Image (cartoon, rainbow, N blue to C red; front, side, top):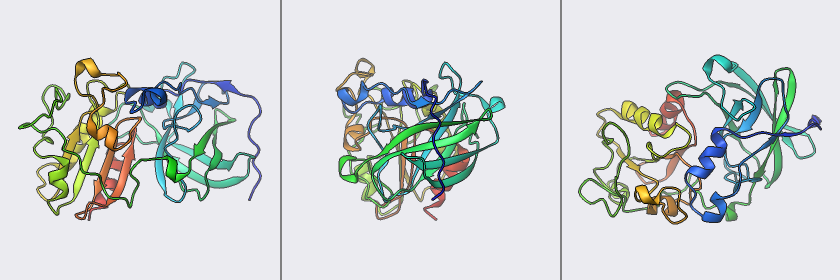
Length: 303
C-alpha cells in the first residue's frame, strides 16, 4: 500500500446535507440527537464533507463486505453545499486507513442531474470494520474526513442481497393512521395504491422509496420522488411504493413520530430507496442523495 499521510491541520465544518439528513429522520431519539459536524481540513473556499452518517458523530451506515454507494459534497464554510457552477466536474477521492495507507482511489464525476445540489458518489467496499478516511485535493490543498465501517451485526440496514422486509404501508384506501400518506405538492405521488407487503407477494419487482418531500431538511426528497415518477412512467411490470417518514404533522421530528416502515428498515436518515427483484431480494440501494443517472442505473439492475 502507498503511504498517504493525512493532513495534520484540522477544522470543524458543518456537513451540509449530511448533517441535515441525519436529523431529518431519526429512528432513535438518542441517535437522532447526535451532532453531525464532520471534521475536515480547511481550504481557502470549500470543504470536503460527508453526505452520509459517518459513524463518528452519527451512527454508522457502512459495513464490511458489501459495496455501498455514499454521497460526499463540497461545502462552504457555513456548511452550504456548493451549487453546480461552483463544483468541479471531477474529483479524485482516496480511501485511506486511519494511519494514512492508500486503499482505493476513485475519479468521480459530479452528480447533479435533476437535483438541487451536486454530489460525488463514492463506492465503499472494505473488508474489515474500523476507522478510515476519505481525502481529496480541494482548492490545491488535501482535505480529509474520518468515517467508521461498523460490524455488520450492529447495523440493521437492509443491504444489497438482503430480502426486503414486509410492511403494511399506508395506501389511499387505508392510510393506517398516517396523515397525509404523501406530502408531495401540489398533489400526491401515484405510489400509494398497494402496501409493501402486498407488492412483495405479487411476484413482480418492487421499488420502495422512503422519503418525506414536505419535511425533508435536505431539499432532496421532493426531487427524488419526482425523478421516480418520471423514470417509472406507465410501467406495469414493477410495483412502486412510496412511504412517508412521519405519522402526521404533529409527529415530525419527535422521537416516536416515525412511521412503521422507518422503524422496520432501521433508518436514521432519509431519503432511501430500495430496488428488489421478483423474489424480493434487493439489487440496488440509494441513500441520502442521488440524481437521474444514478436512479436509472439502480432501476437497470432489474433488467
